[in-house]
Length: 271
Image 1 (cartoon, helix red, strand yellow):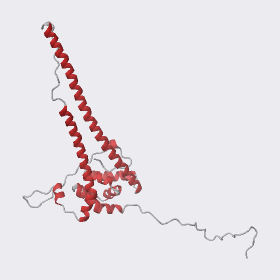
Image 2: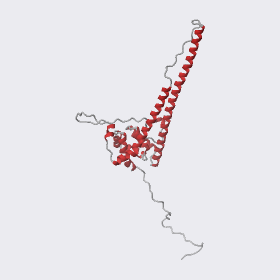
Image 3: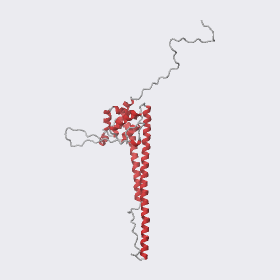
């Protein structure tokens, strides 16, 4: 999908983030068993009750959303294939050349002219069906693209608004986002950070803590999201600006050394 984005993000300049491969563990001795892949790690990992709850409430929701998008995409593809299957399975009709009036009898000549005209009609119908199928395919692809773009625009605006609330300047957020993007991150994990309430703080923290960032980029997306939710997010929260909640003073203090003015009627003397 995209790198983590600031206010001055340009949709047209969106850069594709390359999915980092899971590293192959180094081994000192030969072994008959192959190293676990990222998917194997996800299958064999044992979450603590706290991690499992976070996975179910946050990471699981994001994974489900991504699967829903994939299902919708497959449904659009299925509809397109159905349109194609309903169209007559035939090759484009071939229109014969004009017959030579001197090579055939009058009846045979008229018959060949009629056959040619019928072929022209069938060829036009075939071309119209193909254009309709292609137009339908383009319309479906456009609708899907626009839907994804609207969702991304909403995420970007929310992400930028949260950055402003946390006192992170657009240029600062852009630099942090570029740093995170250089390490490569799965689209699901990027979406997870964008949608998180502390997303800009998480981005800023990771950009300043490259060891944690490198570790996340090498983990399967779901495990990386759990690590963000259980450890990184708490550390990132410490970057919140400190807010002074003390109430303003009720009275403005008088200047030092100035005597209060006497009260009472003008000309009155107080002893």
